[in-house]
Amino acid sequence: MRQKIVAGNWKMNTSIAQGKELVHGILDRMAEVPQDVKLIVAPPFTHLYPAAAALEGGAVGLAAQNCANHESGAYTGEVSAAMIESVPCQYVILGHSERREYYGETDETLLSKIKLALSHHLIPIFCIGEVLEERESNMHFQVVSSQLREVLCNLSPDDFAKVIVAYEPVWAIGTGKTATSEQAQEMHAFIRSFLAETFRELAENTPILYGGSCKPSNAAELFAQPDVDGGLIGGASLKAEDFIAIAKAFI
Ligand code: PEP
Image 1 (cartoon, helix red, strand yellow):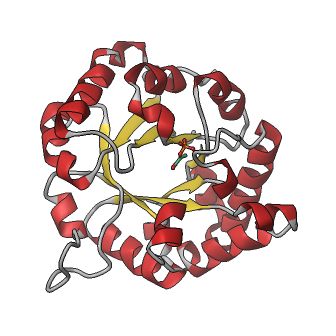
Image 2: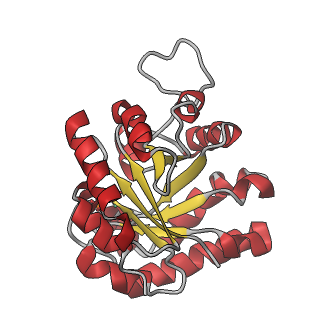
């Protein structure tokens, strides 16, 4: 049985006070969340420490949205995997399309970030996905397989076994346009079979999350697909009621 996961990527939103309110809004509703669903929140760096205190190492996991690709040193403005581990935090989102597009993150950088994260006991939530032109020109499988080949396929089986994958078609992120459940299932099944070529049966246990305008009204249909193990949620994770409604969408 693969872990069911709903992770909230807050991006660059909320003040510390708003972040605290959001965490408490989630904690107050935890009794509604099925026991077999793991919730993770990914606030901005400045919010991690107070969020960790509020979460008190309980059922809700804590993720950073990025980490540096160096262990430590003269890298002004960067935050290392060791620092994130020390918060304490358990997860880190890596390879989000906004980081790839606006901050020039390459497969090579991402491989070094993933290795550093794993060496600091952080579980990477590794994001992949195609842009609209790639989907329209039928290149989406090629794009996604290349993102997997250049990064995850270079990990040892032990390291790979810890990774969570998030398929996020870039054309669906923050656009209100969601992949259909058929498109999501088709790609998730492709990702799993591609990973199985390198990692054999380990790929059966890899949680593959869907991301891209997932909300309470479409989560159930997406999560009902056999290879969709949950969601990475942007906009809808900023409202506790919506985030919890999504977590309740598993059948
Ligand atoms: C995201 O950025 O990871 C995301 C899925 O955003 P949204 O849900 O807002 O499309």
